[in-house]
Length: 176
Image (cartoon, rainbow, N blue to C red; front, side):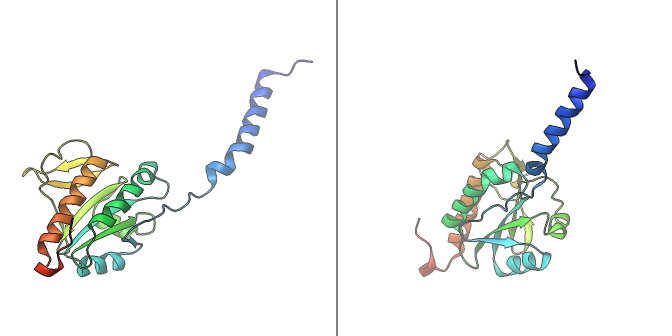
């Protein structure tokens, strides 16, 4: 007895759903944070971080975002190398938990990296960081990084670290 082809397709479809559904429907593991990175889950958290630090580099991410997972270890290493309490903070803004923060800054793609000086969004003049994920304004300054552009992220984080070191009182400057 030969089975009709549509019945075979139906059985294969049911088996595929049975075996694949658990992995497709499970919640992704949260992205691990390393180094001196501040997790942001609300607008109040973010406003407090902005007011407590002269400079802030913010990573807007989602746990389900593959590129966000790929760039997370680099972001942690850059935070370890450059963060300075009160002068430069690194934040990770979970766009699913802090939708109000993402909405305030118009973030709709992940990862997006934004920079802040004295509590306000800013653009940073970083030589040689045009193209890729770097969004450069008319003056040639990097206004944001969209996507997991490791080269642009490293250049901007290091430039912010240098600005923070230059703003430190003479006796407190961090050695390179």
